Length: 311
Ligand code: ASP
Image (cartoon, rainbow, N blue to C red):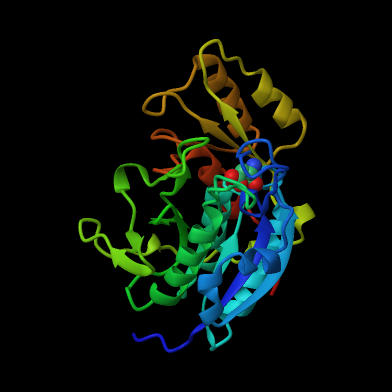
């Protein structure tokens, strides 16, 4: 289907892309989330010819991302996507939890228009800032993805387009910090042109799973509490028992190897399960969480446990 809409809405949430340092040579000693989305857009002259609206939804270092911001962001994205004149939405975001927000939005919205997250590894004040180019690429993808057969929530960084299910931050500092693992990226952005990677074919960002919309309407205080526990050498069941005593609704265990668990943590998890706590592991095994990373499997379990929307 040809996409005739041309407006791109850019939603700002903070991150390094909006970060500032005292010196243009300082790429690490900076404060994230300092520039507004209006200021950020002004640093990209190439966007002057594009029809853009912007909105500041949050202003945080994404290490501090909260469920409340996720809900507010999801509602703003849904509002803008429903406008006929909007081709797609771009979200500027810190890189630390970008993959979690991407997966959350994919599962609660399952959008048919592109929703493109981008960020930066260097602050806006850096002499070699990567944010402006990433933002330019993200807007290009938001405008071209539908015609290229790409849909859903995407992440665009360092000229590479990743799907929400696969994307993960794989390096703490490199400009090409993001990876889609064995699946590989969906596409590349070359001089503002979106090129699908034929080897992967054109695929939706996260399969055809229907949206789990309850998270957009359920008060955040009522969202199920799902925590991650990690199996490791020398593990005990103490953390699992403490979380159960504290009223957790679900536990996601990040397993070792091919889904293996230390026997002490496994025993504690089986007891938790018998007490009614929902338990999943992030690799194969008991009720498995498939190929999802622990942070995304946590989101999946939380959304699965979400109270249904009142009629
Ligand atoms: N801590 C920053 C954030 O996630 C890192 C970044 O944006 O690259 O907001």
